Length: 93
Image (cartoon, rainbow, N blue to C red; front, top):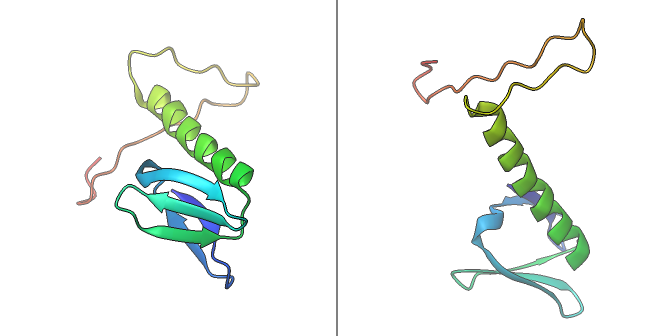
C-alpha cells in the first residue's frame, strides 16, 4: 500500500496494483482499473516513486522469506540477522 493525501488534507492508503494511470491535469489524478479516480496533492513523480518503493519492498521481503535464497550477512559480526516469521490470521506460526 502507498499513502497519499487528498486535496482536502485527508490521508489514505491505496493498493498500487490497482492503478491504471497517474496524470497531471494540473492536479494529480490517479485512475484505477475500475475507473475510480482520486485527486491527490502529491506530484506524479512522487506517486511513481512511492509505487516503485512499495513494489521493491515486496520483492525484497519475498527474497528474505524464500528458503532457497542465500541468507543475508549481518552488517557487523555481533549483529544477528533479522528473523522473519509468517503469521496466519489464527495466530499460528
